[in-house]
Length: 136
Image 1 (cartoon, rainbow, N blue to C red):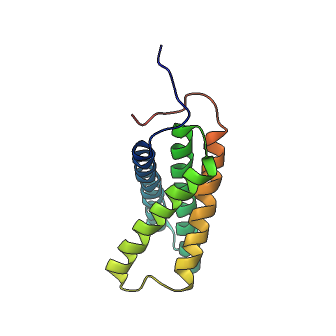
Image 2 (image 1 turned 120 degrees about the vertical axis):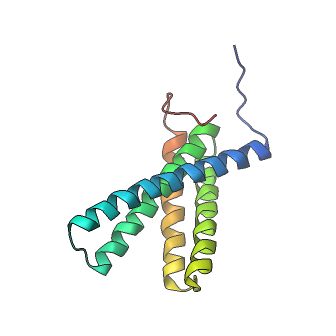
Image 3 (image 1 turned 180 degrees about the vertical axis):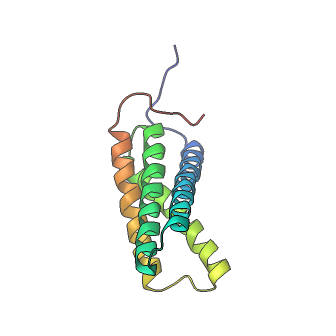
């Protein structure tokens, strides 16, 4: 029988956050593919596109925070916020490299949305019992 400890090593916690952020990005990617397919079928205005893509970011951040805290089984809000910060940092760097401008109101709004969604996912993940899925 394997003995589980509540406190993990900082390195393993960061690996967990990185893996869960990657799974959050996978959720965002799948959502964007589905929305892209939908946009080929119907015409959507720019405001609705922005809203739908923000919803995709929320879903991905929630999934990343959920997985990070579900793996650790404690400090759900902290793990979710760390995952959200990592996801936002990656999005910020990529948008700066491709668009040239990453600052302003949109960046702060994305930061708030990402942190709230990832924190909520972290809280939900630490309070969910059972074996949903494992990243090992």
